Image (cartoon, rainbow, N blue to C red; front, top):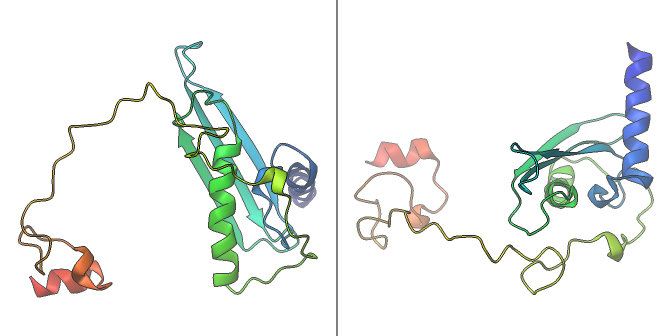
Length: 169
């Protein structure tokens, strides 16, 4: 019902404003969201699937985003901040691109809620016991020539669509 929908939206807004979803907050936009953390079977193995679902703006939702990260590449996987940071980065670009203008006062953000630099040894550093996948096929053919002799797009395609690239082959 409309009443239940309104109540869920209020709960989700509270989660972004003051709850577990604060890391997803895009400065200047009212929004709602909900985190998810699921332990994978077998229990006790330290493997998690973490997620975030959110929408903006609050009064007239125009964008819905759902981010799932299966087994984050960190020692402590049970942390819903990871999908929130991904969602926030996407929304910071998508909202202005879609001409959805800020509906709240800009605060300058909260540096305590910003994503840490995970590659500099700070919090969230990638697991050191992760094995690099060495079974990845290399690029065949001369990547400096266009078109790629094996088909498909290459970096030299200058932004052609798949259809345009296929038409040239």
